[in-house]
Image: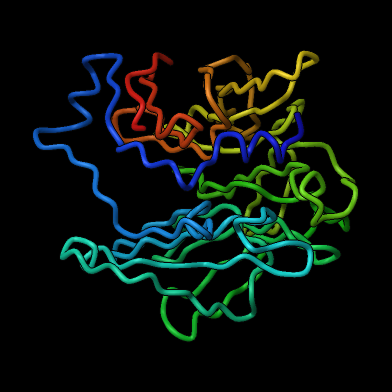
Length: 305
């Protein structure tokens, strides 16, 4: 089973099953609130336009995100970039959401992750394309939507294909994952570095490895106080079984290296593509089974299918 087979096995844009909440723990009712609902905002069965890099811009009440990078339904490959889109949530609330393409210049090569950065700006992480390097780039949230690359190499070497990014809540350093997906999906050259997690200090320009030893590191997130880090690790074992585990680390308060690796949770269906925490420490991830939520102890409390 190849990576591409795994992705297409668990992604079915024509699935007509109505979404629902599957509840495993009473703690999920606290998360849901008094009047939970699921509502479709916009869709396109022929194009994976909403696949990666969701960033909420509170000052504009907009949600930005990218289409799939490197897959047929993303209409992107080593010759063609994926796209950044946005939706205004005021329009969505009124029931007339319009999907807007963001005309970023210079263009970004295969955006795969994103997070909110300083001054209300989105920070996007790119996988790169062909010989064009993976990058970290800040984007102006207003016209002309100009982009500024802040990192594009590791001491002269191109990264493999950058995947996900978060800003540490205390130090404000930028942490990101680098993995071989671009090569596996045929839009990046042979990897030159291991699958690793990096820390970048935008003030000094210093970049360093903080964790390694992953099969394929993917999503990354921090606890609200920055003392713990979470990284999803995806692999296929000798029996062709997809093994998806979320790892938890302690963050060294001095160096911010990731220490004391242990398994936090296991996703039984599909690949956890991205991780996010709420103020109570609950962990959210998009998987092949929908949006799954684990409580701080690692017990699954729901799946939104």
